[in-house]
Image 1 (cartoon, rainbow, N blue to C red):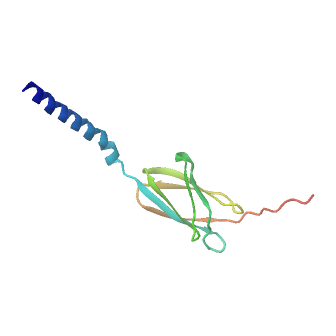
Image 2 (spheres, rainbow, N blue to C red):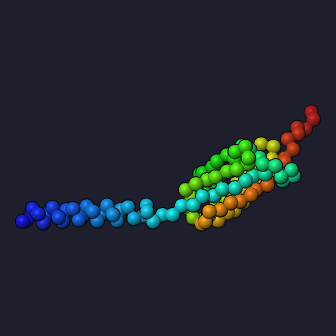
Image 3 (tube, rainbow, N blue to C red):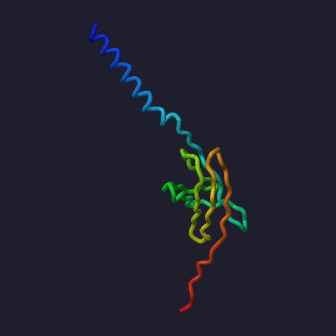
Length: 116
């Protein structure tokens, strides 16, 4: 009888702790941030733009249609940086808490060298 009580108590103790330990993982909701990056003059999509979220060390590159997607983001306010050689870097604040789609426009940057 004593061993049966220990067995049942041990089972419920194990079951209870494993259930409680998994609650934070199940309760945490994540979101997706997606969007497009285009040239500000021609409005054509830009590929290979680095989309960086420095606060959480996440980044991605736009595809050939200027589209990007960053998944599994916790809700909150983030700073986005858009970087592409030949274009001015742009920063934008975004709130993540729903499925969000944003559009960013980059302006060309002159890369001319000074004459010697």
